[in-house]
Amino acid sequence: MPFRFPVKFEIPKHVHVNARVLRDQHKRINFAQHEVTRNALKYIIRNEELPSRIRIEAQLQLATMPKYTSITQIRDRCIASGNSKSVITDFKLNRTEFRNRALAGQIPGVKVASCNTQRIFTRNLRLIPKFSLQKFNKIPQPPGYIVGTVNDAYIAPDPDQFHGNFHWTYERAVTVAMIPLVMTPFIAGVEYPIIDSICSTLLLFHCNAGFKSCIIDYIPKRVYGIWHNIAMKLLGVGTFVSIYGIYVMETANNGLFDLISKLWTA
Image (cartoon, rainbow, N blue to C red; front, side):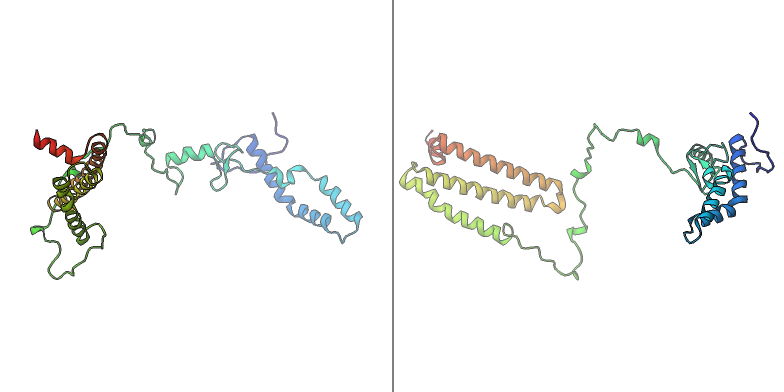
């Protein structure tokens, strides 16, 4: 199909040449030659101070100008393929050519972002649990189990209503309260369920405090780490199970005192 315009211009050697590129180049040349004329006519048409006759003549003259002189006829085209779709203005390439040249390293200053495709298509779900025995090891201690130096200031622990001096006070109070309760079955008999339940509960808390002291002294957290937490949790579970056992013993049987008397006379 012959072109509708003469080819009187030069195309750079690095530009892809086809009919659309030549037509676009012809449009650009015509627009550059008539740009001043079109802007002048537009100014006259929009100027409301001029007579209507002059404005209408300017509008008719603008309408009779070739369509290739309009800027709306110019489109960005890819210099490698001549395509006008998805053209990246900064590089004058469409997205396909830009991607291919970027992957090949032919565009200065543009590099492909590092991406591990194997990691993308790998499932993040791990069916095998991560199990490590290192957390069950003892925590390394400084020489002589001495933390810091003699010149370091003493850091007092935060006050706690359930540990330290309060812990021993509660344990002494429970021990003193148990003395008359333990003597009651020898004096008045074993048929007092309220006294029996109170004594059993106090005895349970007394044993809980004693075992907790043993864990703190012989399985310290700063040395054994996770084993200290496991021992504390086992003590808590055992305490709750014992409370349930006391409830069953007091409701289904005659209580602790009756059980001890049966064992003593068996």
